[in-house]
Length: 445
Image 1: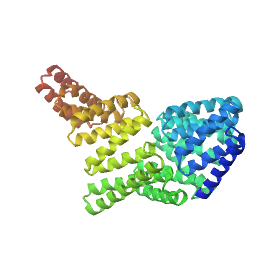
Image 2: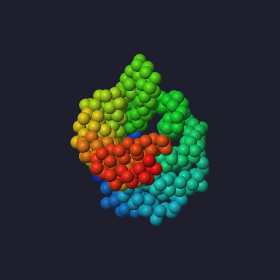
Image 3: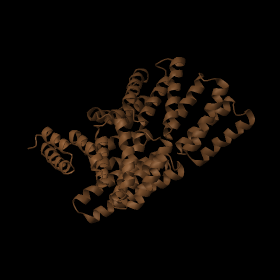
Image 4: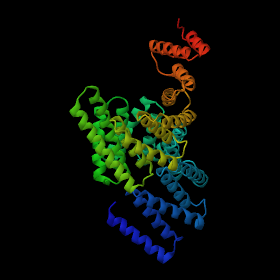
């Protein structure tokens, strides 16, 4: 959407404000259109203001149950989600769905839009089972009412594939990703934004399942297509920069493992350049605390940490944690992951006391969200134990070590060897009963 077009719609909006007033139907239509234009241009803060103003006046003039009001509520919910305002997004999305069901019925397009939007809000919160229910229902109903090739049906299919993937159902996810991409290529064309989204999702799935070369080729196509379609400021382009940087980071690890210094340097420089571009574009155009800006900073910090640039990584992680606490809340999984990452850098810098407090916060929050046997929980608990141990508090570390020993991924031989070493340390620390119990449980003589 070009600047000339955006200026034209802005002039129309201002003209209608002056002629009809803020609450007039024509003004509100222009206000909503302008919000959509700003959203497509990646100017999400301005889009949020326009959608919010339209929703306010429609509630005031038309009432909460009017179809136009419900549309505004749905748009506002989607925009709040993009801004990381998950609680507000959930309340609005549920209101829009309830109102649409009552006003239009279960099968109506507006109701299915609202159902799909609620699924997206659940997904953004990490509530994948709730999201799956919404997306399966929306996909089934859209197939029945719109047909299998309609763009809205394919949107539900894409969302379902992503959610099934998050739930770990790789076989079904791969089939759904491929189905969605091939249909979008046929119906919409190769360069359509929705086709590029499907291509990106399939690429990320392939990367996660070990098909890196295929993933790298697809992600490069997506980034090139989005640069041409949207420019560098758009959120989708920034997402692609992060995705291509992730592939370059994979290369960094591969070349480090095979001691190829030249290729290692090239891969680092590529990833570093992409991530710095993503950070600059997202902070400037979306805001310093936008989830995408924070994600880009988090990824850059991880790359720098990997290369021993700990001071800059520390500074970035601190900004990420502060931003996520403010925008997504203390209990959000992304916030807790960022806290865990920051603790890791502090520990590497020798600041174990600072790291311990952060590990404690991260571990308690992650366990509450995922349970104490989830791999992420186990990793965080173990890092917390190591940090306590480094600080001389072996006694507090013991229960964490034992929990990891019971639930972590060990080979039988490694589990016994680790238990033997831990029991010996416990014996030397005077924890004779605990040491004896561990040796008995592990059948160590």
